[in-house]
Image (tube, rainbow, N blue to C red):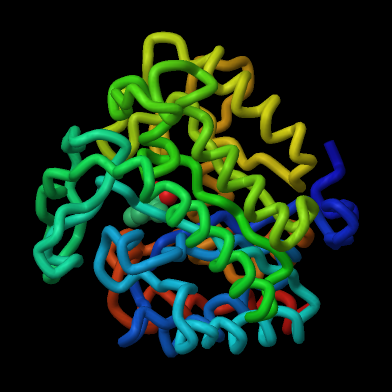
Length: 332
Ligand SMILES: C=C(C(=O)O)c1ccccc1
C-alpha cells in the first residue's frame, strides 16, 4: 500500500520507514553473556531498517534458558553501548527485547537449581545447553513473595537499557516464555492473585509492562504477545480470544508504544486468514538475516539473498556478519 518507505511516528520517535528488524536469537554472546564481538557490526549493518529490535536478552541469571544468549543485568553487559552507538551513528533506532524464559531452561544453566515457572509443570520442549539439545528441566513454582523480584528485574533491565543507549525496550511476552506461561491455563494453575482467572493470569505481564513504562516511559515500551502460538511447549486454550482481549485492553490503558503480535504459530503456519502472511514472513524474516541492506534492496527491487539455515544459531562471522550488501548500487 505504498507506506513501506514512508516515515512513521512511533510515540514521538520518527522512523524513516515502516520496516522493523524482528528479534532474532543468534546465540553468539561472549563470556559474561555480553554482546558478542561481532554484534556491533551485525546490528550496524542492518541499521537502515530504522527500528531494530535486538535478540532476546535476559533480565537476570535466572532468566537464561539457552547457552550464549546475552543479558542486560550486569555492569559488564553495559557493553551494549557499543551496539547502540554504532546503530545511532548510521541513523538507526534500536530497542532491546527483555526476556525471562521461566520453565524453558535447564539445571545445567543454573548450577543444578530448577528453573522457575508459574506452576511446577514441565514444558514438552528442548533447549540448547552444553553444545547440544536437551529436554528442558522440571521447574519449580515461584513463591508469591518472589514475584515482585521478577517485576523488578524487568524494571532494572529497562533502566540499564536506556543507560546503554537503547531507544526503548520490547517486553518478551510471547513464545512460551515466563510471561506467556502465566497467561495459559495449561501452564499456570496457581490459586493466588496470579492464577485462576483471565485477570489474574494477565497480572504479571501487566505489572511488568507498567513497571517498565513507569521506569523509562510508556512511549519507549513495547510488548510481544503470541496468542495462538504453541512455541516452547505452550498449549494454547481452545479459545484464547477473551484472555488476549483483556491483555490488549490492559496494555492499551498503559499507553505503551506498540504491541508486536506473533500471528499464528511462531516460525510456523499462520491462521487461516484472507491475507497470505506466509509470503511476507518468509520474505522479510529470512531476508533480514541475509540482507543487511534489505531496505535499499526493497526500494530498488533488487533480488534478496537467501539465508543459510545452518549458521543461524551459535558460531562466528559465517552467516552472521558476512552477508554482503548488494553491489548493484555500486554499479548504479
Ligand atoms: C527467543 C526466541 C523466541 O522468541 O522464539 C528464540 C529462542 C531460540 C531460538 C529461536 C528463537
